[in-house]
Image (cartoon, rainbow, N blue to C red; front, side, top):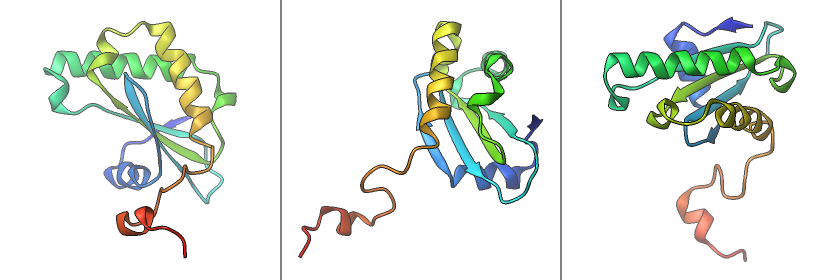
Length: 125
């Protein structure tokens, strides 16, 4: 498993599937190459001081280390976007959330996704 480090890679993953959890958001994107699974971490400044953001990032990295690689899908890039709740949420609960998020990220898109607002509210003819 490798780390995402280039901004372009983070931006590409941001356009993929997204799963929301209380402590983080998991973004994922399937790649067309045969490379390894890559994971990136980000925490915005609105989540606190540098010390708090670093602590959130460390907790997210540890989650990925403890998560079994079987739950991650090959040829995918993942980005974990940390939220402030990651500071206080129980680590075991966060680990379960991450496993569930990996499983949910592979499901087909839910209804209405990808439609324009006008088309989503229109009745079929």
